[in-house]
Length: 285
Length: 135
Image (tube, rainbow over all chains, first blue to last red; front, side, top):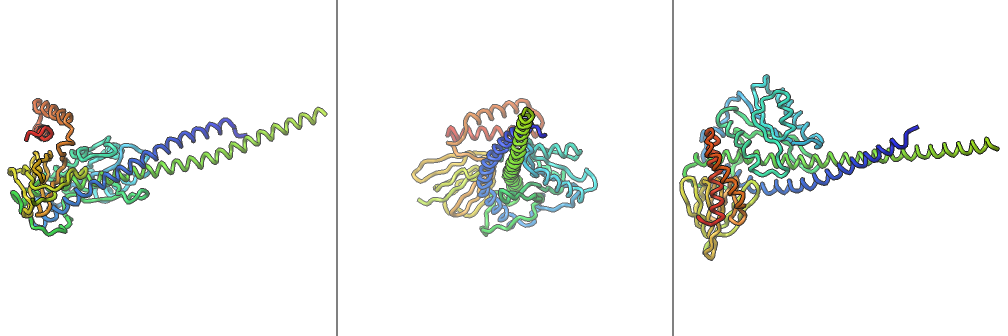
């Protein structure tokens, strides 16, 4: 016979787990709201900078700026944006799986690429497998500011300019909606697909177009990276929220099953007792 | 008096948005004053204060850390990695940053660190100056 005490214990422990997952779900959903509003605050900056970069790049064709020219690719850099903690469903694993597949397809040896890792899970994954991790940020706050990733973004852009690698790709989860996040690969450098500006204002450049590109392009590339980080953070919270909601639902199912079992067992125990009493009484007559 | 809309935008969101009669900013090649109706222009900015003259004569100050200014006849945008208007500057934090940068400069490590500390020093000084209003 199933042990009543044992079942009771399992029900209680599942209940307390459910409390935790439920709390985590609510925390994530409020963080998601903040992350979404952060991403929204960032949009005007991005649009503006895109606009100006487009206008200037169109005005100064063939500037020969290193960030605009495509070089023969000898080495590739991947900037991977993941999270510090797990319990976020397939958030990290789907990125890592896709990137690993891409790397296997594109590269023959580990010398052909380097990795920038954002998030502890990502860093540990690549360090453990002896990949060339040349930069990492961990323990980012849930609502990161530009200052938090300025350094890695600056490094990533600076090393491209110095010729340490010839391409820079970003991998992150694009936030589509609270239930759907898509692993996205984006080419950051060289900047080949700058959208032409919508406003056809002919600008005066002070002191010169080249001098401005010198300042503007790194700032643009850094802001692309920051945009991806905000997007990734929103996805992380959404993905954690979904994972925790599933866990909470599963706990409810489990508790229902266990309660049924518990009641059956209790009933069986009572029936048995009655049978024994009745049997005992009959033996006395 | 004619006015022009000024936006100061950073990756962390818009910082300033108002009608002003004149903008004075510090570009990498010197200070410029921009009045309404200026021809379209783009210029990179140095770490410095931006003076925003309002109608009625009062002047507002903003600390802008690099980035660039985009001028159109009816609109001026300043895009910077970070920027604050005078009232929102955290003076204690800026002073702490200043002390940290000074300390680092005295230690004289390798070149990159030196440059970074110098920039940090400039930013901190700029913030303090703007907050205290002595420009």
